[in-house]
Length: 397
Image (tube, rainbow, N blue to C red):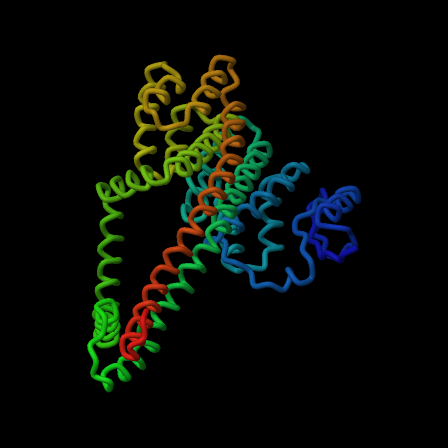
């Protein structure tokens, strides 16, 4: 059994704080619900003392806000009372200010979606549009539940991609640091010995020592050139033409991974919007915003045009050739059966699972390739030095 601290609210809006014994977090939530209260925050004592993250700087905080507000509205509390409770229990000053600003706008007569729209850094367009659709249909609590599921799925997918790239990143950093250490600190000691002996050195050793000396003497030029190149590259890919060409190159090199990633993003976003009551054309425009690859995003423009002409989305998507064949087939079936929103979510789930496999396979190939590359560079350094030592001592190599 573990001890969890909690913050909860009653149906009347009264705040409660305390601790509860439970096997895990889910069991603690269930016990609180069985006790007739609405759980808002559940954390272990260690988690409770962690530094809070700013609302505007973390997607996790948006997920927490959505989860808590969904629970309060689902329990029958009015929107203003739910927001007031969230403002009171939140310990982060920036988050509290944002929630209070939203609450103030609502009390002055603005809709919830309009109040959210005044904070574009915190609430993306897709979030605002889904809330607006929920307000129009009188199902705001249902839409918030769907938003919660959407944000959880997006966060899980992003966390999986980031965790998969941790080891390759560490490998590159440690390998590069080792090579720089050899070239700038180890080799110069041998250079002095070779110069005192005065014998001619093998060509690979001469090339290596020349490069090492240049790196020592002109490291600041190398660093400045690398920084300038990086800044120029960033400036180029921020332009429309540069971003498109860079995305096209990435799509050619990593076709399988990128197509599965963008398919999962697009289908989950579009499916969630349609299921929440957002009109198709508006949903397509919002779904296009979540696609990071501009080559694939540009194909959605043709899809929107086809949808305006009454062709649906299956045929325009097939003509655009931006989604895998299986996804197109499933979308076509969903459109024909009138269950497009459900089928899009199934496509997203299918490709999220497939993406994890593709990333695992890609990382599995990337890691040995990086190890081999680092080994070849270090091996060249070692062999070049051995050739010099053997030539000086007149030993056969």
